[in-house]
Image (cartoon, rainbow, N blue to C red; front, side, top):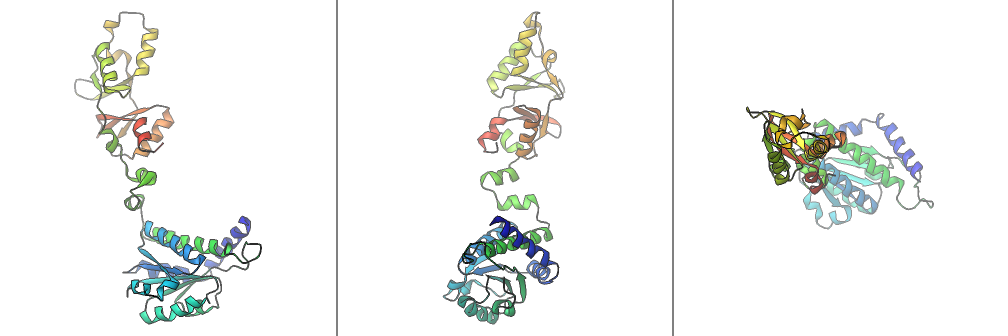
Length: 312
């Protein structure tokens, strides 16, 4: 079944280059002042709803209109500057035949996403998005399977072409997807998390007791080490302390931060995305990063911060 549907999609892909309608449809939508209204009946209506969701999330304002409801009042949602895409495998269903003259009367551009290029819908449409399907993957050739998959894929292709033509960026996408993990990956910055944490820091001549109190009191498992000019010179983690105490044989009261710090710690800028912090932690097998602002120390981001936000 999957192979049949994949082959049908390939047929549509191969045929796009021989017809100017797809590119012309993209151009027409790009010049719209209104919205794209996608309609259909039965299983095609479900596909229409998904295409509308994809268009909206990628920068093309869209509405769903059920073809049956359209002739019972919903036709009022269509405005003069809108563009209609009607999805129908046969292009000859009764609801579509009633709807098309009403759309033509409104004077809105009409694109037909159809399997039958000779159908009533295709003939009446301004643009034909041809999605030929010779047979459904259903063993009885009855249930809409291949036809709906092909229509969905063609709708996705349309949405992505519009996205690319508009130079729709990750930042644009983030503004439309602020919720959930996806949204956080696209908009959550390091500073949004690090500002909630304390800022453990000691001078490079700090004694061991001061270092231990700073790390344990601020509860981030590490402290930054700064010189007298306030510049970051290293980091000391609780792991560094354990290793030092295991091997050190001198007097502990003589130990200073400079003696045990790790120079040139892994840092991340306050304006970087939080997912980049996660990538750096995973690459170095560490649990915290020093956060900087224009090169100056301004805090820490910890793996627990990312876990709490659901990014891990």
